[in-house]
Image (cartoon, rainbow, N blue to C red; front, side, top):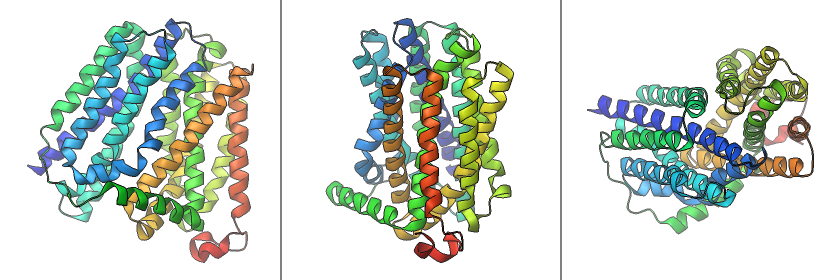
Length: 404
């Protein structure tokens, strides 16, 4: 029974995450067809990130108070509502497009804690939990890659209405599969006000500790750059490499960055020892160097290699910090609260990064220059993190005293 429920969870997660990534490409296509400027995609992307900030204090408690399978259903229903709206709204109105994607974001932030929180309810041992976590991450990564690549192919050969309907169908299938997951009772003693106050206390605690502060800022900077690069490169490829914005090759090229992140994540333990996790900053600097260079390239094959390398350096950069953050955060505030705080910090930085990208383009900068400016922002953050490292001792061993 539990094996069946786990398989249902993996499938519903894959279908939902695939649609999340495909829906961005549907909206990007809509923006192009309705004559919006390339930077307008940043505004729509910001609308998706906002729910992760606004709802961060309560989505975790909501997932714990309700049966988690019901929370998964609610999340998918909200996503389905958001993407369905694209069919009926005035697609030439940027505010309505933003509201539609904002709704998808609300569904995503509701869905997220339940997909991880339900795992301990479906398994019996720590080893099984480790295996289940690995599998759900694998399905998520697969969904990102196929959602960008395969989803882009679907969008390129279908009308906006058809591609939106396909997203609706996938969310509906994900929702249907969720009914195969048993309903475990939630904790009715949870009070949202108390938990919200505890959330902000956890934010303060993690930001005040040297190792978790370093990791939170580092992972947040990485995802800020990734969010901006995804938006910018989607607009840059047609201009720099001569592809039509409707060509599915655009999304395939974009997907190489995600492939690079997967490769980098796999290689990270071989290049960075966990006891010296702060040395991952070296790969952050290498990532920035590549970001500075690739916007000025005009060869498709070389661009693919550079984007793959950007992702790979990013994967090596982020994995050690993620690991340390989870280990230290679990001891200090608990695993669930650490993930909630991490999502909160990362999405704040992603909104800031996307907003700055939009403003830079609006002021007349080229997309290539905007990418370089984002690289410069990442560089400043890395220099700040580097200034916190005491060259004479290891932050892993020395704790707070190893930072200035």
